[in-house]
Amino acid sequence: MSLGTAAWAQAPENFLWKVRSNTATVYLLGSIHFLKAEAYPLNRAIESAYESAEFLVVEANVSDLGKLNLATFMDKAFYQNEDSLKNNVSSQTYRLIEKESTALGLPIELIQKQKPWFLALSLQAMALMKSGYDPRYGVDYYFLSKAAGKKTILELESLDEQIDLLAGFSKREQELFLVYTLENLKSLGAQVDAMVQAWASGDAKTLETILTKSVEADGSVAPVFEKLFDERNGKMSSRIAEYLNSRGSYFVVVGAGHLVGKRGIVQLLESKGYHAEQQ
Image (cartoon, rainbow, N blue to C red; front, side):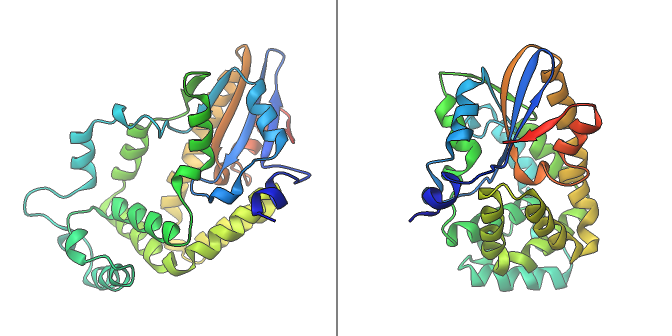
């Protein structure tokens, strides 16, 4: 029996919350951005919520890369002219980069021009794909493909905003984020396996614990994760509250980690006076 049939299709609870106001309904679905084909079909409750909504809302429309300003992206993600990664991180970090890139079969020459924030994301993606995960099976990508030409697609952020956030990290923050990534590469597949199992059964507490332990193990990276999660959660919950103050029905797909915890979107909406009911 596949994971999709065993867990997603039959789970009594989903990583899905329904929030209502007098004029609007918002469904909040936690997304795992990299998944496996066996994760499908999704639970019928999730599909029904999607079908009932007028609007699909995502963090950023990853299926519309044409909107990205390529020249600006290249400037923010790669070193220009004679500058390189080696000039911008400590010798200890650089040795760690050499070690882990070699383990992934990635020649150091291929990554010399990548800035630390972008290299961290590249290495995460490579490690996940090595474990069988693929962004093409990500929950957000699945619904974006399904909605194309059929529903109005809205964004809580945009690709440019997300890139600006990551590229806006200080040199020190970028290096901390990269070191954290390098030190967790070997366990990343197992960590995502555990997150996927928690997601499949709608177990928000377990998923929160997995994420919290990961960051607590290296307290130095906490300020980076505050920017990646807490600050964005505040902005995204305010945007979702605007939907609740309008008219209509919205199916909101956002990274599962943004929904959990005291500073997660579900709790932030409840603190604004809305009731979120897990489905």
